[in-house]
Length: 383
Ligand SMILES: NC(=O)c1ccc[n+]([C@@H]2O[C@H](COP(=O)([O-])OP(=O)(O)OC[C@H]3O[C@@H](n4cnc5c(N)ncnc54)[C@H](OP(=O)(O)O)[C@@H]3O)[C@@H](O)[C@H]2O)c1
Image (cartoon, rainbow, N blue to C red; front, side, top):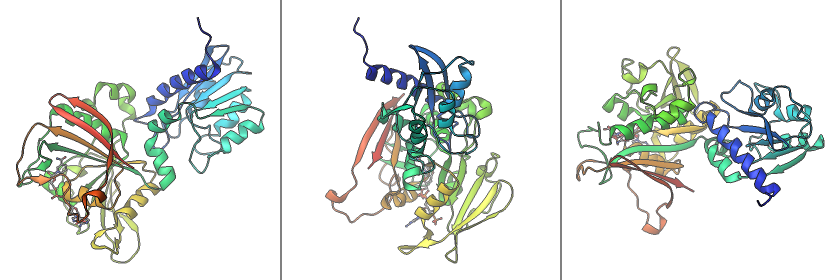
């Protein structure tokens, strides 16, 4: 039997650590998902993952799960650079030094300015050999929203919509329940849980009276397994309402017990928030120079970043989505296409006018294609 090289062994253990990290996919935000495995003489002595902010990080769980066995000279495999700072928990790099591991293999450097290389430095200063960049692309994909937020100080924005084969999202009357199948709509429950905020428009809230919540019993089975009921966290709901039209607090969006922010146009240039009650706030955001009648969407997104929102899911009609798209504020588009034709008078998925020529039109990268019964789910990413 061929002997495995050290690179191959490192890849195998990082792949296992990535699998563990995925357990935090629906619960770890605003923190990244991280997994850790501690190995000595080809035996896994301890493993762990980060489940929720405020609880121990993956490295600490892995050390704890080793049950007090001697970790001297072991190798720790971590999917993200061990942290170097005191946040809600003490630094993991120090915990690995104290555990006397000999090598640390990490999939990638943590771009969080509080860490970014400092964790690696603590390890190297203590004489620990550090290898970085094993299965880096996979590790980046797992934490794409967190990484984007750290780099751009904005959340990663995903637009989701269900549409007909002819690209329509509602009838002329506004009726849109339901274009896609029950299973496609169940899949949307997963998206709501993957993102910490849902962004919508006053128009959609008034037209559809949606709840925009996560309904545990409708989650796909794999999501239920990764997210126990007691860890379910409802996304923040953010309703752009420049004209202050949403004033009826009996609408469904206010009935789910989770927080709603209504975003209104600020008369001066200030950004400020007032609380209506424990669950409803009004955030005032100014317009930008090009669009005096509507709030400045980029500014709103940067305010959401300050609230540690890493991923935003947009669920709105074509006008809202089209304007976000036009302003280059969309990172990913997820569409569920149903085998129906709604005709020329129905509402467009992206309702905005463009005077660009075809060669200037944005191109997207196809990320995945999936069939859900009779519907097709497409994920496209923008560069
Ligand atoms: N099939 C689906 O997946 C799906 C999902 C959601 C909604 N829908 C359907 O979509 C329909 C609503 O679509 P819609 O197009 O009428 O409304 P919409 O896209 O949901 O919202 C329009 C909002 O965009 C803002 N807006 C308008 N012009 C703008 C501009 N030039 N720049 C920036 N912001 C601008 C306005 O907000 P402010 O004035 O407050 O700034 C307005 O409330 C509903 O009938 C709903 O059923 C379908």
